[in-house]
Image (cartoon, rainbow, N blue to C red; front, side, top):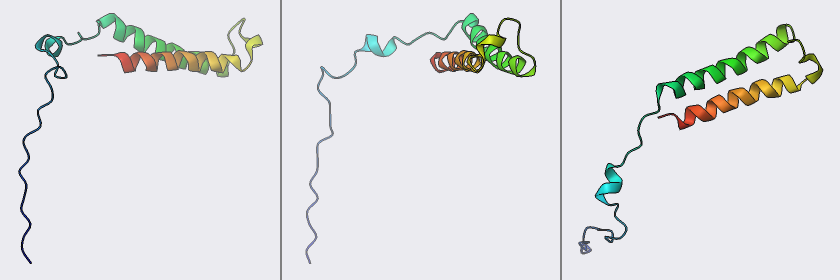
Length: 88
């Protein structure tokens, strides 16, 4: 059986209006400042400590919140995780 011919394709070059400009490529986001990392870790730890302390002995004034204490602690942890995702 004869072997089929291999067609040569031209290398793909995207249109010039699609290519990013040199100015866009060089513009990179700067790393996060030091205070951002400190705040992120602090929010994560405060959320964890809030949950642990409320299980061991409720804080004064928060006993009436009931299970909302757990939601507050988890909200702080989620906020810290959102900050971690945005950290550069």
